[in-house]
Length: 324
Image (cartoon, rainbow, N blue to C red; front, top):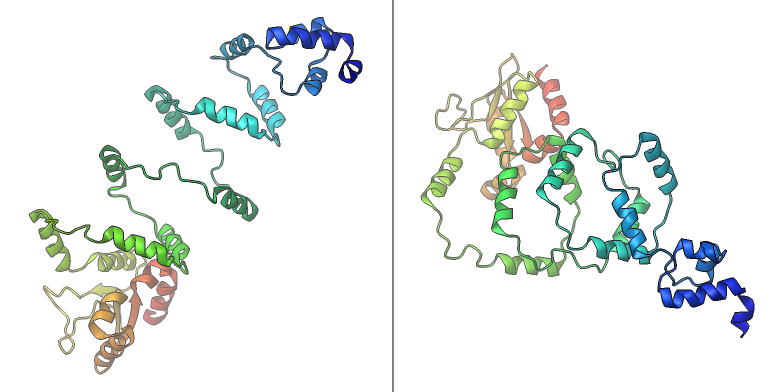
């Protein structure tokens, strides 16, 4: 009785009609002279629009194009709008299982060729990153336990073949991994996953030939990279480290690069791993090499793979200073 006393007659009648109608329409509310806001306030769980009305609205919007002014107004209205959790779940359930046609996918590709992505050039703030990190904690990845089919792997392989990352990208990738500590649990998992992976696997003759060629290639890939970098920056250095056809010997040692101006400068480029393996440490290699060349008046400069790729400008400044 208390509830009935607080509601006016029109609202009571509308509520009784709603029990039989199951869904209350805006037209029905107008007939009882009750606003949708008032009805929603009293009955928050009820739905005001019928399914047929929703379908009509959906069909009426197909193929409709808004003007730039309308788009701008809609954008301003939506800014700062927060969608509640219930609505998000509804949207998610509606979109689940939808497969886009090839025509639709092609339209998207064509669109983004001429229009930049809305987030392109922008960066997440530290606060945004923190929130995203917290939301992702404990969430199971969508592809966990799924096996990537061979057809998809082949597509990825074809797309990445011949792709060369810029020097800046490599530097950023290297810096992002520095100081990263892999947990012992992860290390064990990686070890177990790799154990016996290649056991009993036979390499093809073509693969073996490629490996042998790469082992005896001179100049190697790193040296070729240095040759190109020195040429591009007009550094007076000549590659003489071709061990198959050596043209420059000092006590049986063949340096990598020698200066072509009046300066007696030798440049050695190397991977630290191999020098540690062959000489025990990089310092031992430098000491032995520099000592031999110094007897004949040559100054030796050493540059590692990491120094060339991560900070070539610093190496370049050192070379220009020594060769000027």
